[in-house]
Image (cartoon, rainbow, N blue to C red; front, side, top):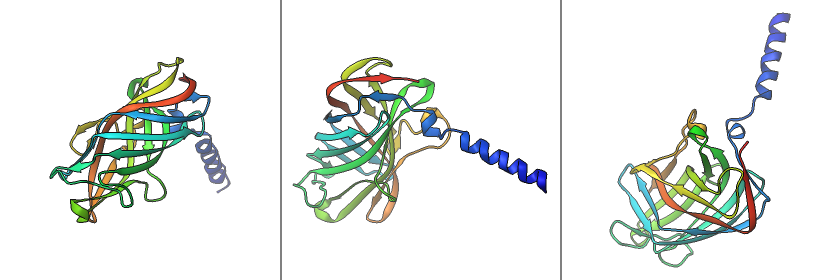
Length: 215
């Protein structure tokens, strides 16, 4: 019994020393600061066939450490496949707001990525209504995108990113370092969940130069 206790203690200590999956796959951006976003059109698709498209967007946020941050998006001119406006309650017609937290990560083959996570226990990313309020959509979960600039150990005043769908409702990037747990988003439509993908690209624009390091 004594030997078993010692063995369990050693195993437990070893597990505590291991880095988390995210921590093991993080690149860094410094110094921390606020930013604005410059983005192109955005689309939401689900495996159930729902499609919402927005034609303009803006956003802002801040890096809270060298590898994490917070961001808020406002998508405008948002419409469903029937051409009716999709709107977050309290905003002007066709406007959808979205909030999230993000972590800088590595994808497969050491490619750089950004992991966007919904807020709170529900991991909600956005909520809006379409068809004159008859349809309620709640988007929650995780989105993983690719980062294309600056280069590793390079500097600049912006960071370019792209979130893409491999097919309707399926995000192109779903894994940290390309292995292990798969992360995706869900769109719950009038209480019925469906796997979702969000496609958009753009850049985070900083007020001064930032430098990327890739441990």
